Image (cartoon, rainbow, N blue to C red; front, side):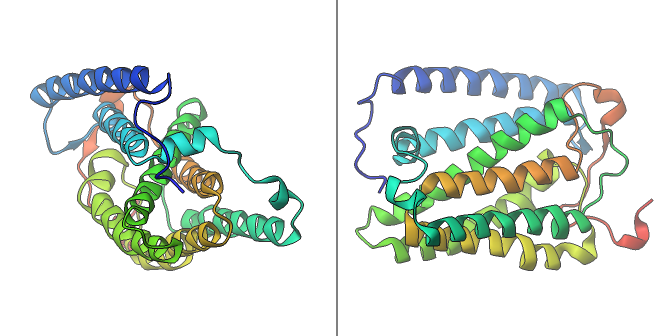
Length: 259
């Protein structure tokens, strides 16, 4: 699905890589300067945005390198035969319904915002970028497995095991400490994994195996992570002095310790 694209064969690719490289260097220099000035054991929204920006850029570049981004840019959301197929429509609507319920109800019920103000002007774009990046990164794992010559079922299994494990480690060791603000409730983490994260990835991969729609996969991640960003009230990049707090644990706090 993703291996047919030849590197640098489209006019937009070189400018993309140049802009991505410059942006990554600028973010890295700015982050390094802030790290020198500010304590390392403090959660800092400005540094969180810089780190997230590095992640977003990396995901898009990896997506380009594995052929995922070119495929998304050159293929339709769905094939004409699918839009008139009742099975495709039912499966796609059902997939998004489960994702929205999982994150809008289950994930939301196990998450706290700690009275952070909600700024939709920054929350919505951040959530969309986060979803686009995470979705493409998972599909990049699919593309790498696919390059071995194995079929879509093997690619799905490889993405679930490899991508799921890497994503879990990434969140527990970095993202949920240095990027996402304190939002987890210790007692609800398992429930969120079982009823939100696992159905999301599993059903998206099943949809990919059956229908081969990468756009649907990415849009599902955009939906899930935009809701997550909204629910946790991800802080804006301004107002640092008021928003900096003691560094938190990724697993969150026990419910009894919440204010």
